[in-house]
Image (cartoon, rainbow, N blue to C red; front, side, top):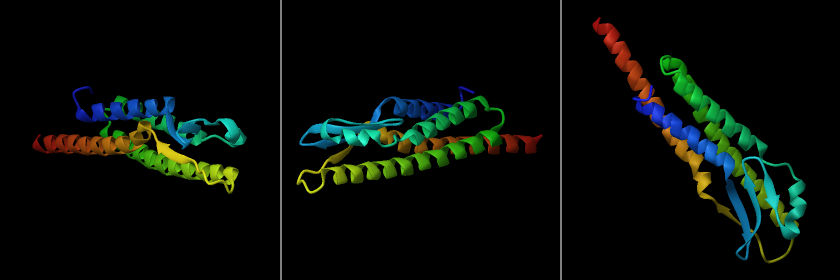
Length: 164
């Protein structure tokens, strides 16, 4: 289990997804002052923008992260059942693509709400990505590498079965 490279890839996916649960994944600033931020479960606004705090938080990002963590750990445990491990890793990759799309939608949604709240003021909030927002993209790449490793293992096992 540990000696296989895809185990390392899947463990890194789980670690990166867990880190994404704990940190802010984006923030909005006006004149170098943070006015709003959002994480995997919450959206928070300060000052004049606190009216946006009542909007629903991006809880689905947190749920997707938890599912990816669960699937990655489960894939590591299913090291003897390579085809099932492959399927779970593909599902995890699809969930990560959904995470990235949902992240973009929430960032756009909150940007539009902040712009609407400000109205005609010349100052518009600027969205800044945090380093944690790159983790899902890295996780997609690591999942693809894990899929390659699982397929290589399966091909090796099948070739050894042919030799017998």
